Image (cartoon, rainbow, N blue to C red):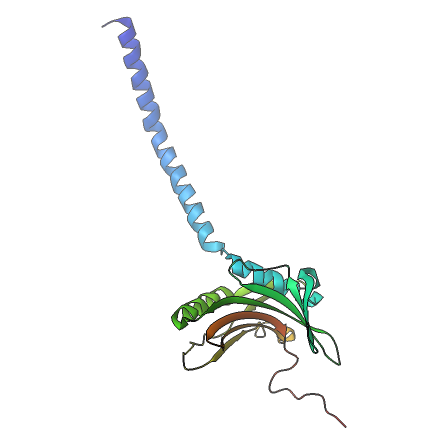
Length: 211
């Protein structure tokens, strides 16, 4: 056997030995990488775009939505409507509404998510939006809020279905802050809307007495 062949054979044996020695290390590193990837996926929830947008709206609630209020678009006797600077990708239109009040200015945010004459399509979208809002997490003045509500299945025979989310179970002082998901009929179409608003008082709370 020539000197070159001997050297080549010796080199191949050394490379094989290195590979055999490195194989357990490579397998261990692969296992660690898989564990980290799997654990991270389990621990860190991924928000979808709609959740992120609604959370940003809720964050600006204490400011009367002033940071997300755009130009004025319509004026009515009891309210003024403005363009919203936050518009979920799937929405048809979004607006901030200033409502007239003898006590204080009241603001709400509204997004139209769907308009269709197909009830099955509306019902499917309604459930999808509900899933996005359920357990939505948002920060209000340093307080973490998690919004929840039981699901209500719409019926074609019922022209108005509303699900109201709040975080009152953990933060009673925030009981007036609501997120509403609505499915209603307008003319011959089904319309899905989301609203973020302040409810002045609960149904079982007494209003201001008049002497």
